[in-house]
Structures are given as structure tokens and as C-alpha cells.
Image 1 (cartoon, rainbow over the protein chains, first blue to last red):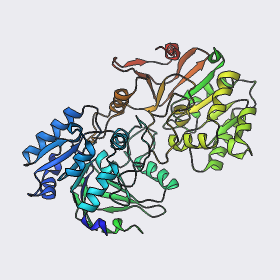
Image 2: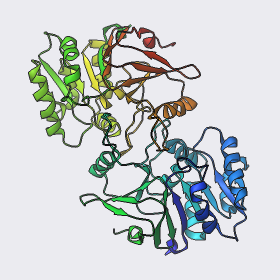
Image 3: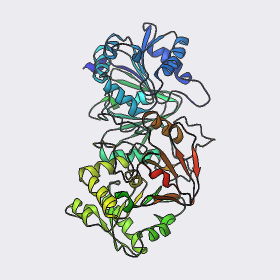
Image 4: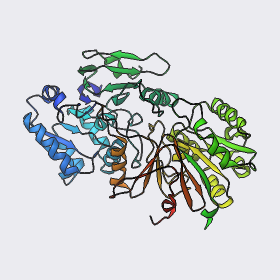
Length: 242
Length: 242
């Protein structure tokens, strides 16, 4: 039961409308990393400007009492993961992120560190997508071709970050988010947790709890959609047999 | 100069708000296929229900005087392409569509028929995406993993169908369509034509013309965005050196 060591904070979105970078979840970040973590390994692969992105994360995390190391600053990214006290993968383009994780050969090392060694893992947006089974429920544009859509697999289901309800006034005819997830379920039988902007999932071993200020919507193939509000226990999602 | 035989009708969207399936482009469809085409080979791979989708297309095309054959109804899809008088690839999920085109080994045969034999090709939405260089500027969810993002390559640029302008009133923090295309240009130097719902591109040999009721927006790496209105000559996009 390696998964009993797992601690994850999977955030829907890095920035909530009207506030600054990670402001809306800074209390949860402090609670999550706590006082024992001093340095967080930041993975900026989802954005093109890795230095600029690392500065943004570093500036924010310093206000919370943590130092940030950019994985791209390390001579050996695998070694950086091996030494990491804690890991944070930021948002951006999920395809670029996953391709870079594979190109740098850190997918399995991150999985090992988090599941076997209990290294705390925080993800935001694309960083939340790559923590799940696959990136098949990302909202992003496929700007590069990763060697697989299989992701780090820290939880046995998929997440749709930035989940958004249909706009009843829209005249746009592109598929709604719910229609897109229904198309996914025509192909694959994996649950999809739609995290609206403002909410996040805390995973501690085999316990999962919804945190934040908005509801999540769970999509299971062939079943009615279910709404969960903050504080809900979603541990059943961690059961492979779900 | 094989491309001189090429005739394409690349439609942004199958259904425009407030009207029925393909209603908004039915005049252009009739003009495009003309009186010599009797039967159109329909490719329903982008939707799960291929029979239902083919019936929808068949019913609509009959009102315009054309019979429709579903490629999935043929014993040998490659042979169906070889015999086709005209081809129409419908919309749905672009990843599912492209994977099915590869699985059925019709990608190169469609390219050959259209570029070398002058078989008229109509695409709508996902069917427009697969007509271009790659599906890297689709809006769809990556529900299945195709063996490549490279598409049929009937034109030397990419298209973003269902192109939509930012909603100034939105509080949603997901990337705008323009931001997503900008991320694509951080990786790849291929022009992207954003076709708003209601417009379509007619390609005749090395001549390209915007048709329909809405503007298109052209994105070129490192250059200002350019708006084109219906009737615009976009032939310059067909020049590989553009």
C-alpha cells in the first residue's frame, strides 16, 4: 500500500478572477507544506518562459516562507527530483508540460518519490492534469505531441481543471465542457472530477477532501452527474475499483 | 504542381446558432459540389454513433440533390476513398477522427485523391482541422491518442475552427483562444487561420477565398493579427513560403 504515503494538493486554477497568483489557495498551500518543508522544487515546463515563471512562483512562495528551486536550473532534473523535499508543478499548456516531463525522464521518478517516499506534491491546472491517470481531460490546445497521454498517475481517476458550466446566453456552438467529458466517456471508463475555478482536492493517503470556495462535479460513465461542495469526502475516488 | 487540382470547402462549424445542420452553408455546398457530383463519401469517424451521424448527413445532402455513402458502411474504406466522387468529413472530436483515419489507413489515400485526382473535399469543424497540416490547433479534448498530430495536409497552414473572441465580461481564467494560439506559436512557425462560426474557406487550386457571414482572423508568429472579411482573397496562405 504505497499510496498510504501520498500527500497531494491538486488545485483547479493558479489565479482566481480578481486576485493574484495563488492568492485564493495560499492558506491551503501553507497548511499543505507546513513548517517542515523549507524548499519546493518547481516545475515550470508548462510555460515557454521557464525563468520568468519560476520567478513568479519563487516570489509568491517566499511570502509563504518557502524557497523555490526551478527544476530547469538543475544540471540533472532526475537528481533534482530525487533530492526534492516537495514538488510543485505549475499550470500552462498540458501537452508541453507532459512532453517535457517525458523528455526529461522525470515522470516515473516523480511518481516514485510521491507514492513511495511521501514527498508532498502540489499541482495547479496543467500540474493537476499530469498528476492523474492521463491528460485526456485537459482543456488545452495540443501544441506539441507527447509520447503518450498517460500521466504521472498519482490518483486513479482524471480531473478536468477550470471546469465551467454552460453559458445559457452563449450563441457559440462549440461543445460545452460537459459534452466534451461525455465524449471522453464514449471512449474510456475513467471517472472525471470537474474542479471549478476556486476549488481543489487534498489527498492524504487514501483520504480525499474537497477544499476551496466552489463545488466540484463528478462525471462517471453511464451515471448521473454528482455535485460536491467544499468539505466533501471524496475518498471513494481513490479506490481503483470505483 | 499537383495542388492545382485541389478543390476544398473548409467550414468552421456544422451548425450555426438558431439554424439547422449545415443550413448556413448549404448554398456554398451546392455551388461547391455542383451538378456533376452525384454521390458524396461521408466520413463520420469524429462521432461515436457513425450510423446516426451518417443519417443526419444523408438527410441533409438529399435535400441538396446528393446521395451520401458512409465510409464505415464500406467493406474496404481505402477502396471507398479510391472510388469516391467527392468526400465530406464531418465534425465531432478531432482526436477520435484523426485516430480513426489512421486506423483505417485512409490518410494518404484521401491526400492522393484530393491533390492528384481533384476529388472535391469538404470538411466541417474537425473535418476542417484534419484537412490542414496538423490537428495542433483543434479546440477538442484529447479523448484518444492518435499515432501522430500530422493531418491530411491539403493546405500548408493550420486552421482554428469555431474561433471565438474573448468575452470581456467573463470571470473565467482559462486561456482565451488567442492565448492558446499564441502558445502554439511559441512552439511552431505555422500560420493559423481562425475561422469564426459562420465563415468558411474555399480553395480552388492555388486560389483561396473566404466565404460566409463572419470574419476570419489570421495569426502569424511574431506579426500582428489580421482580420479578413468574407470575399477576401487568401491565396497567399497557399504559398508554402508564406
